Length: 457
Ligand code: NDP
Image (cartoon, rainbow, N blue to C red):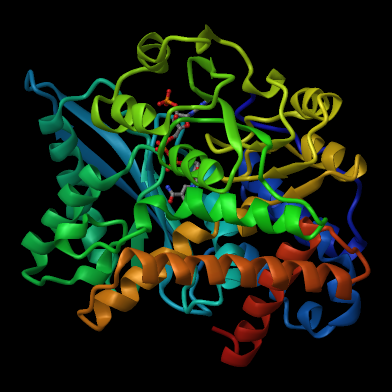
């Protein structure tokens, strides 16, 4: 797995190339951000040919420049009293469709580039959900691994002490992401409430059920990814039933993708974390996985030991070499490269859907598309999480509380609509079955048209 990828894609149309050159010049060294923008620009060639007003209004230049970027100091002290200083970020990218919306990531490799790539993707993903939410992202280069509960709390409080002045239910609504789950959101919300003296539930999503959270939000990204790949298979007259599926990661997205895949009749034969892979040919025991990863926060080796039978843990192995017909990368960016894509294709994969954000490198995406594999990009396939966050905001605004069944029905319908939208848009632009084209074009056009309508803001 590589953290950064040089953009070596084919040249763009000259107007789009100009936009890209300027972006590279203004954001030097930000490889992940360049990669995410290039992936969108590549797809937009037929769109700007059809809609020249986007070029005239400098829509592309405007969409690539965040509305606001905030970088701040996060000082905190560990349990021994030693002081640490981290860097916090919030990129408020685009509010044409609604308040900025997107998660917070705590991971040592968080940088301006990572936050901008995630924020940029988030704009189009959020547009695809059809909900009234703009795009943003944030986080800190803080490593929560091995930190005590009290240290996590102090870090979150310090982070929110600065962030709180920039967010609000009508302005910017953060959520979780890698390293930020319900525990961290609790500490963040508590500090926001304390400073502002307002029980403003709609300021954060992914909250606990007991304090303003929505049912299904925890499960939504993974469930949505499973539903999306189910729709992709249905479009080819097939289904998840009886299929061997590989899921990377073993965090929030991976666990609930695995759970829903198995409920829909598939068998998840492997998952992973940053140290290795568990191969479990009889199908991952999701209840045990939850106990090990969510409750005990232990390593996957513990899962393999307790599971016994044919389950094996392998240090440092690649999950993409485990044979399967459906692959769901659900860990992190650029975790599936061209070689991994080749291994999957050689093993007979028929569908790949991104539960994580940008987990497939450009080489891998090209390989899947060239081999005619159904490929669901993260913007579409993992949009169920943010869509359910929008449902959480809706419940907070109306001081209401929906049942699990009702919320999941809404999620299923949203994923079906996103799939149908991507499918129809790809058809309309002469690229049938190309979900990368469908998702990027459908999301972009929705945001671009709103920006045109709002004038030069
Ligand atoms: P978590 O922190 O819950 O889980 C991340 C998982 O990925 C962990 O199992 C982690 O292993 C593994 N991982 C992290 N870095 C690496 C690496 N370098 N190599 C291999 N495995 C790695 O995060 P989420 O599940 O919330 O997020 C996963 C992805 O999904 C991210 O790309 C995120 O942006 C995206 N996403 C998340 C949404 C959400 O609602 N949570 C919504 C939409 C997208 P370890 O424990 O060893 O670190």
